[in-house]
Structures are given as structure tokens and as C-alpha cells.
Image (cartoon, rainbow, N blue to C red; front, side):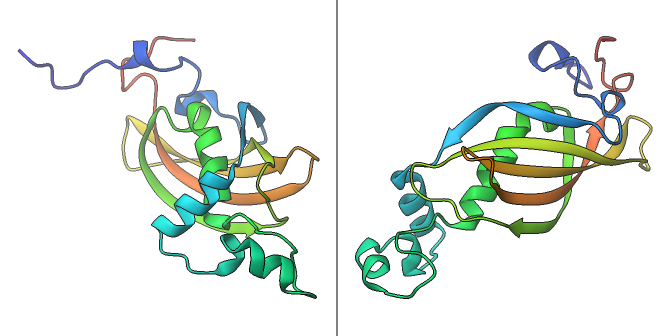
Length: 169
């Protein structure tokens, strides 16, 4: 016999339900990610981004007077890595991704740079569901030199502990 709703609380953290986020809190996420040449070239080509600045080193070095003298990592990869680094803390109890907004690529990322993610809780609001609420996060991606590379806002529909069998923290 299959239950109507499976209790997944043993598989996820006990401190990342809707109730655990407070407006104004800033979270530093545990991991960083060094961006490799493989990450950039493979993923850029997989999404059919044909901008040579992402995969043609010869052209970038010979461009003379161009913005960069080496390949720059595709911004979509940088954004994805920052959201991915934040996911363990901000995504485990998410029912739906509702919005991604205000994406800004502030500083270039090059092969060998390491990104670290931080998240600010911007807003919490009620939803039309008793078992979930909406949370607006502002995510930041900082490189190894503390340069702000990526920022974006993300709105999610997040489980409330009582509605989903999560044990009290």
C-alpha cells in the first residue's frame, strides 16, 4: 500500500523549511566550485552558444583592444553554478520554482576561478496553499578574490514543516 504523501524529512535537512527562513538573513553556503575549461567549453557548446569569446582562445588573445584577452566563462554557467551551490540550503523543500529575476553578471569569470555562493532572504509571503509559502532569495556568486560575479533573485514555493511531516527543529 502506497501512502498519499511520502515523508521525505529523513532525506533532507530539518532546517530549511519555509518557517526556517527569516527576512534579512544571509546564508553562506558550504561549498565552492572551481570553474574548469571543460565546464565552460562543453556547456557553452551544449546550449549552442556560438560566441567565440567562450571557446576560441586564439581569437581572444589576438583580438587586441577587446574586452578580455582570454576566454570568459559563459554567464549562464556562472549563474547555474551559484544557484546549484545554494540548492542544498534553499532548494531541498521547494515544491516549485516560480521566478528568476534581476540576473546581473557583475565581474567576468575565467577558467580556474572559484565561485562561492551566498543567499539573502529578501521576502516571505503566504501562498494559496496551507502547506507552503513563497520565499524570495537574492543569490550572490563571489570569486576567490571576493569579487561579486553573479547576482540574481529567485522566488520559490517552499514546503511548510507542519504540512509535510518535517520534524520540529
